[in-house]
Amino acid sequence: KQRIRFLDGAKKNNIEKKQAEYIFELVNKFAGYGFNKSHAAAYALVAYQTAYLKANYPIEFMAAIMTLDQGNTDKIAMFYNASKVSGLEICPPSVNASYAEFKPEKGAIRYSLAALKNIGEGAVEHICELRERDGVFKDLADFTHRIEPRIINKRALETLSAAGAFDCLEKERGKVYNNVDRILAEANRSQADRTAGQNDLFAASGPDSKPTLELRASDPWLPLEKLTYEFDAIGFFLSGHPLDEYQNVLKQLGVETWTTFHKKIEAGQSY
Image 1 (cartoon, rainbow, N blue to C red):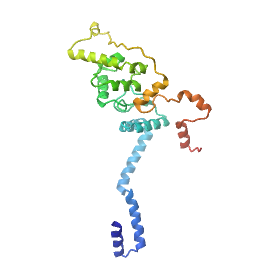
Image 2: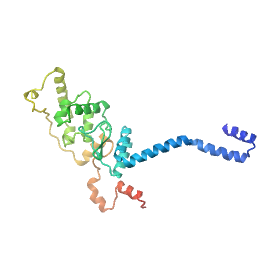
Image 3: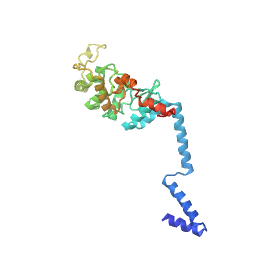
């Protein structure tokens, strides 16, 4: 309809049909995906500012965009790989150091607790609130006795242990994972005592007494088993890769990592 209207108008203004058709096709093509100058200028300014931040504040920049898309595992994995290519370190999640956002930390980026699977916003806020109010968790028993089990459930504890968020309190992830039921039971008992206004028998013995937590013995996870659980909790491999133990063999065969390949392509090398 617009084509007919345009050509008719051009004819009334003594514009040749061939010229009018050429002009209309230019406009039609631009209308598919085009912007006026003011719009393009605004986008150009944002692009310049973004490029400046990425070039001069790469850690803060990556932490910000990872926080923006922390609900999208595929994008987080893409940003993680981009960070590795750029030489930026991503620190694993930690109940003593992580927040709801990805945070710059001593020249690195600390992984967000909220970006883990099966972790609700309320659970993350609860952990951060306890830490800020009463200090970092001293050990797993301290964590167990301070948390509210109605906020941090079984799935959340399993995810935290599988992702390595308890590594700062207990190195054996499998031991924590396989004792989630005991952690919850002890947390419920401690919560019931607080609600009833009672003090723990051992806590009453003196200020130096510590909360206790008995964990059943558990075989340590094998490296591949550890990575498998980590992948399920995070959505990609963070602390390592299943092929890491084959690096010597792969090196002898001349197999390159994606990071090495990517750097060579950026440097202009061809294959």
